[in-house]
Length: 88
Image (cartoon, one colour):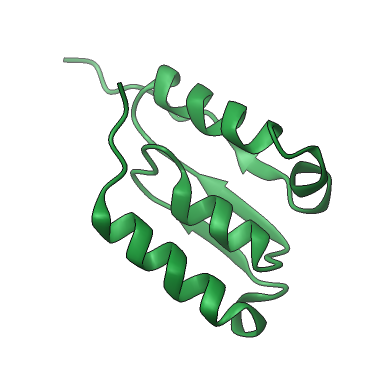
């Protein structure tokens, strides 16, 4: 089960409340987890959003959440849904 961190929700709220400031930007969410902040950035009108994390399953979850909104996906593609997993 995934956890959405409070900081991610606060960042998403900040981005959405100032959408005009983020329109057309290229953004990157590091350690995306559920991708809430990256998806909010895309909803605010970002030109491109890179989403990164260390696990394929986590990035797959971000991709599924984004694809649930086909309109969002067509307007702002999440450009980087793969990140190498560090060897332990």
